[in-house]
Image 1 (cartoon, rainbow, N blue to C red):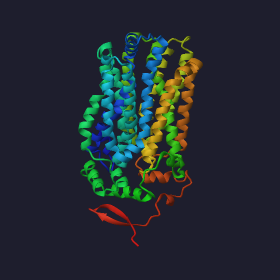
Image 2: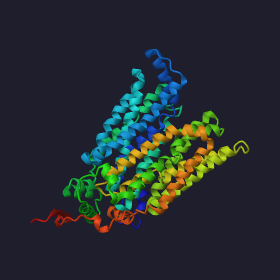
Image 3: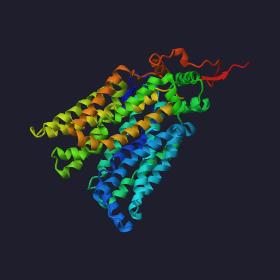
Image 4: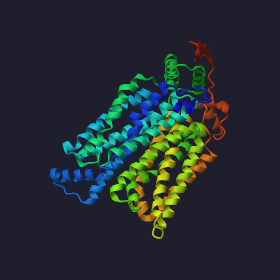
Length: 510
């Protein structure tokens, strides 16, 4: 079905190797991010009881309810601290080990975290839970940036949108799986919570067995490793029957445009005036994505449903229903992005989320007068989730790959990832205080942010669908006050044809 939707009028086919590596990389990495976001919700009280029992019996300390809440909040929020740590490592890791190599090596973190979480109750050590959550966060911080980077570099330009949103589907799927497994009928019992938290090792095991057999990113092999033979072999693997000549030429054009193939540092990225508006764009969309209110919705869905009058025994099933909507919405975005483009999904998603945030404020204010307003507020919650998953959930990671050339891309993902995780942590920490001080009016802040990002997208971000990385750089040249000629290197190169594919540059000999 995916191929039928995407092959019409496209110059490159969605091959089985491309589809396989997209699902494999996302299954063992991106899905774990979604799973770890939601997995601690169901066993929250059991984890608190474990902390209380252990501290009383083993450490002779009887914590009060506030102290237990602080410990549990640390257990939840340290995942974001680990994520930010992982994001800071991305630039150096992908430069040294490559995109696929980084994903394969980072799997060791999942096995360490799985062991800590799985044996924490047996060892009666609360610290193992907290450390395990931190380590899973480090892995998610790495994979959340590396998977879209890897898929964006191996995909032909007409399939970059589709493959770029495959990770976002798996994030939604991970949330849904955590919600389903957390049901009381399955693993939502007190004796099963360590097993529930440690299930992350199974998808990663499958990824570790299969992903090493796939090639590295062709762009990494050519532009950073200067290995034309390996580049051609990788492209032939991913496009068994396609003509790779044009892609090799496009990569080499990008290689020639770089004054140096050395990876730019984060500081160098921030100081480079030739990518000023690209940097501003990833700052706006990544902060806006997390401060749109979606994290507040995910963190406090049960409370909102409880306030809406849904009976306590049915709240867990309602929450699972929202998870199913996330998966469906993510798939809808994945199959429409190459037809509609990046900008329409971003603009439509943020506008719809903004309206739903405003709707929550209105419905909560009138709940006392009109009883059915409670259920409209639930509908607004579902609308925010659906709007987010269709566009803003995956497009920011995709366009981070598209807006930068090879030399700047690792640093760009480091900046985007750090801002993403920092904003995630901030909203999770600040939202309860906002709600206490502003009540339902706090959602108007999220509404303003969503509308602001939508307006920015309308006036600043160009459509990148079916554009090469060089073409996208040239589209920003005017905004950055850079002549298009300045995007190309002044080095004098002679080109030699190798194996009939592309050319191999060398400096003029005197």
